Image 1 (tube, rainbow, N blue to C red):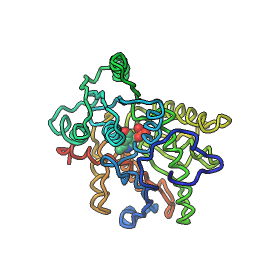
Image 2: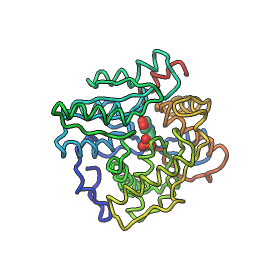
Image 3: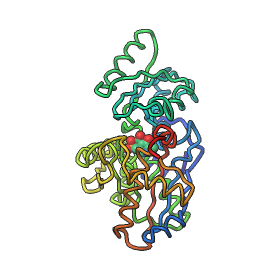
Length: 339
Ligand SMILES: Cc1ncc(COP(=O)(O)O)c(C=O)c1O
């Protein structure tokens, strides 16, 4: 949909339902680059995807919804934390294509204030007409989702269950496609990026990009992630596994090498969804120098890592860094009292 099929990355055999309007822009950030006085920083505006408030999950959902529709599903169930952007965008995409949607949301993040529980993504889930199951943090959400799916199947419904973050190998195809889009845009803009910086949550965006670059015969080590969910070892193992499973779908002859997965845990802080001072500063810096909005859980933490690395001189002056702005704006309203 976004670029013509590439000879080594032809995704046309996979069912897909278009949810994006076309390629997302790559933009230069001149004021931020000047302020940090180091690398030259660009953003890939994955937040500018047009449905349901936008965000990176729509690329995965093009393939997940495509698969669900190809299987004749009438209902989609997915899982996530209370303020999951993936859950919100699954609800929006379901509304768009006429599927019933149920969300199994766990209280994984230790926050119980009114904004966290009811505002942001949760407000939007309700507007999109999703049914929300509210589970304690200790619950096994996927097991609950499977049981609920079986209950609905017994009533004659055709249910598609979508994993955490939409990061199944099929979902990751969306970011393999994005790798091809970045390559096409880099050529058109005559730009070569030394680093592509991303947040790593369930690992699907990172894994899909790496799988895409490997399939295109390009250097996947350029993708540098900051984990916001698990520790480095956990994120590395799951991302490597997902990247290889995704490549298996694209071209089973190819493998991702272990050292092609670069993950830094410096911005994780006390844990998933728990704000850090560096995240707060990074969100403020981006908003006040460029008028762009990051989110407190994913892009804010990853951008904080980029800022720290530039400030510490880890990138040579003039190097070009592409930061993937993955969306998640509703999260700011859920974390209102942090700012
Ligand atoms: C706004 C935002 N950015 C980044 C991510 C991370 O993507 P992934 O789960 O594929 O690692 C997510 C995932 O929930 C997200 O919602």
